[in-house]
Length: 150
Image (tube, rainbow, N blue to C red):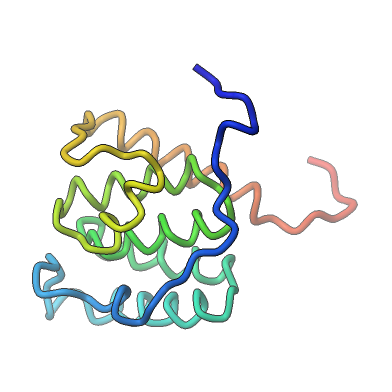
């Protein structure tokens, strides 16, 4: 059911503290595998702090390709989408982060704002489909608009 535009709260300012973005002890990242993924994540944090959303999204997608089961990467990608006011995409990634790690602090912090219920179970097939669709949609929204028609 679609709600009227005025019924959906719009986040005007999202404050992110550096400690919110640090990998926590419950992270499922593997030290030997995550070297490159961790570099992408660190660059994404820097781009996020500079409000360079396009670059932050790209770095996080690269990190997720290398480590698809890292909840920290999904949570930050959800936050970046939230900061761009892309609530639907933010919900997809925050839900995925919580699915991978129900104690992910960053995801928990913004789940309430997105009205994602604690312990909300999602079908893995539908989640994979939602993430695929979100990736395709963001590809089109990230393309520079030029005079070229497809």
